[in-house]
Length: 101
Image (cartoon, rainbow, N blue to C red; front, side):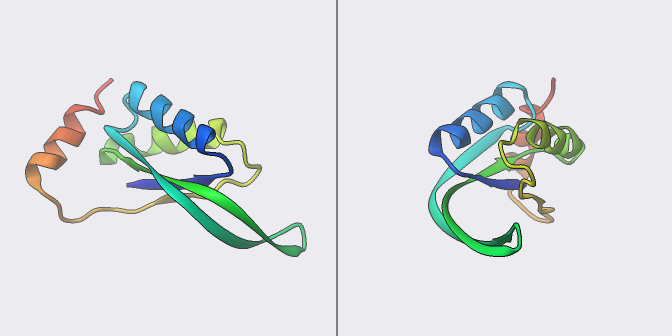
């Protein structure tokens, strides 16, 4: 699973749609607003962001991360990769099958 956050729902929707259409992810879920507090340019800032979770196969992670790095509007985007060690086998098969180019 790969996650990121962006500053606009429309951007989250675009990233989700592009990843799924490009078979970089089998599914992308845009989460509701989150309030983020973080260091940026020597100060603490807060902003409203939208989270996006991408479900992908292990062999597609690098391509998805690169796509997000290039497409993301942030100068330093949060792109986190979490390995899923256990899950429903049929779902894992579905993810694998729907991330084939």
